[in-house]
Length: 558
Image (tube, rainbow, N blue to C red; front, side):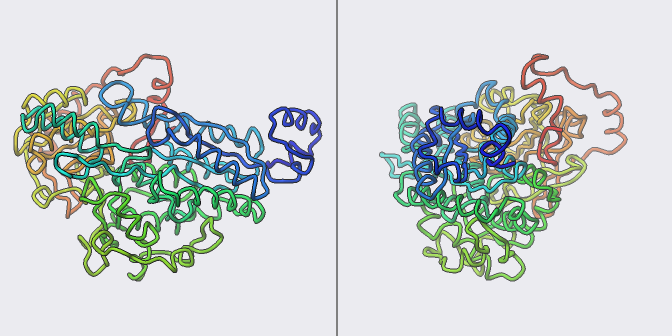
């Protein structure tokens, strides 16, 4: 369906009468123009979204100037940083499904011809991408842009959100003072925009470029930069052109596009959450994609960038060095890595889009001859502890943690783990196990930034590993392995681990093993009982827990 259904169908008179009442119809000529939805995720409580009301107005004006009729609507949004540390984090991943469903509902109920999606943070980007694949009308993505990195006045050190979480751990170990923590907190997030490192929001906004649904510059141009305004104007022009040519997501979101996204992900060391979200988006697009595919590309694609939390650089440095197009241009020099003939919303192929790009700072975006490593920044580990896979951001793991064996210290929830780590229950050489925090068991697969940051803040980042059926913030670094599948609540092997069991982690070999014989595990499995639900029997989380599938298939609702 498109807008002709409501403008020229059998009920056109009441349809048109109601549309006149909105004030959006400025002349009779508007009836012959494409109706463009502006799916905006403006909410005032998320710093990455607080400015999107202004962005929405700019995009509306650009659509109108290009010959379309814009209609803006809003979605919900959850700020993961604000939701951490309490029950609100259970709603974070679950909100992705609400966003996808609500965008689908608005687009199909009102028969729009095209849509400009304005996301920025974490679950909003993949939620909108899932809806775009599902509805399949011409679509352009233009995010609100990343935040500028902060500066600590007393040291001149660059700051980001990870700095704050790790400072909490450092305070608990008496490594800094309350005054130092306050100084870091006050200066870590200096502007609006998505958090300044290669965290989940920026990772997904960058991947949107490689997928072909976002314009060049979408992932790296700062929220406060004048160039971002020019991107909003270009998005308005582009969507009207896409409608004219009926260029839809199904023409763009091909297997080749997803392989380009995986290649970029490995080269830039994206958030481990990109695995979860890319699987979910591919499912909506009807493109077969598995956890094992990520290892295929990790083995093929060199790691070219180390952006916070894995390194000292931030998104502003990536933009200064040439942006995502420059990373892709660098990758294109290695045969067989990119599909340069993949179509993008520019109307050109990926190869044509990046043809004029260049790396302007080889210290930020390394050439393939001087890559940080020959393998990419993410890895999927398999073994008897994670038969269906688990995910680690290898780019953020120190050499000391690439191969690690230690005894299990078990916590049955994130809250229990936070308390245990901050009170010294975890020692050098341990493997922390946090379970019953998966999609179903959490429910909602909480992010584990607080415990991982506490480990780092207490000086244990190079001597303690952490595994969980939950997930991690893009701001997490260190030997942190998430998405363990099957999850504990489904009776996965992680539910059978007992205190002191040895766990062997070998990231180069893509392996994670529980060093317990199969007979003992069989006995434990026979005695295992499913836990009681952690949420009330009614409400969205209860429905989510009943319907969500495993992390290795994207944690989508069945």
